[in-house]
Image 1: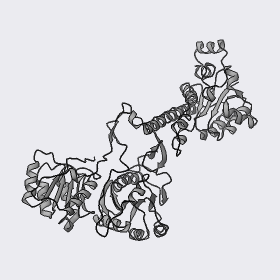
Image 2 (image 1 turned 90 degrees about the vertical axis):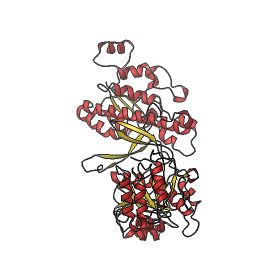
Image 3 (image 1 turned 180 degrees about the vertical axis):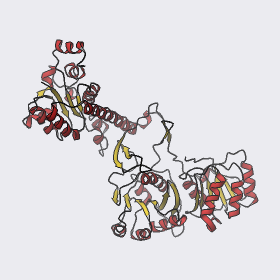
Image 4 (image 1 turned 135 degrees about the horizontal axis):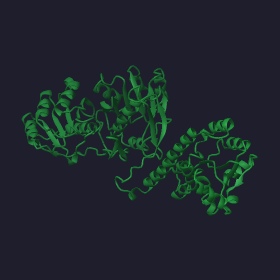
Length: 536
């Protein structure tokens, strides 16, 4: 007679599987709540304690951790000494293990849950059962996902056993599942005991679960999916965030990442428009409409088909401004009902309700102070924590996110002319945008709105020329921010020809003085920030 051990926290479908096994002549071993549940459904069950000769102890913490259970699971049927030892010690081989684990993640994310409550949801016996059975997949079927039950029932009814191919697939699922479970535990304790781990640990532990599949990746011939942390941080989940529109694509999400992080670095009502992972328009405003209009005018050509992110509610007035423009995605903390009515006619436009934690409430406490005086009151972003990861050379590069926001009090004025308060304000805004533009990064701003952006170039002077070309006449009187130093004064000469009046850059080149001299020769105010913002 074949033997199955059933021990599940999630009882979904377990009655059907148990009944099918019983009808096919299998012996069912179970314990605790699973045993009581199956007995209540009229299914014959052998209690684990009858097999081990030892009762459950420590309030159920120890049930299945016993040689008579794990010997039956781990015995290799083709090894004579294994089978002889089972016979000597009266151990029955186990042919199937069905187990899913205590709901640790659900406990960890429950509002107000204490560490003690969460710790009690760390499963010990379950992962041990699963890993033992998966290790011995050649003879033991192991199941951790209730969605697999129907396929197993079909195979048993048709063939009396589970095929080797399916056993392999199920074993692989188990190893991935237990790895994810352990990672969730590690992630939880890292979040509640942040001082207990080093800045970048020796072991990179990534706990992610697939949120949804994507039609394809950057191109139609590439498969893709979107994964989110098992234990959520301060980034909002995309699952359930979409209000309307087509399903999100790989490129949508990649662009949204840039737009979302950039807009939440702004300290007042703001809007960021991104195209091909590069900001093309950024602005602050008194209202959502004003911020959107100014951001759009920053580069209306590039904004076509762009991704829009706002850090304020979208109202009817703002929606009306968007209605006649082709956009792929609009993300904001919320939308008024009137705005949704306006945008409903754009059926394919993806609308997402997204805000990082309590950042929206914090923003509402910092309103703009009168017409034309939107102040870039930048603060350390609520998205400051966490890391950026990038695949490279078959491995993964990991670094802290660039959470530094411009602090003009730490800047050094190196030119003869000091920047005016208005220029300093523009430089502060431009430098904040600069760190979200691919290097080499150049941002031109007038007040708190961009007029020209150049980035992703292999040399800095070309990035300057691109930003100036996009700004056109608006370059005159604008402020320029650069993510890194000027290796030569040629960029300053280009800025002077365009009528740019102030420049901010980190400094640090052996030719800094040449750039300073060029600024002085043309009456340009220049400040050194001392902080680089490469983004590759």
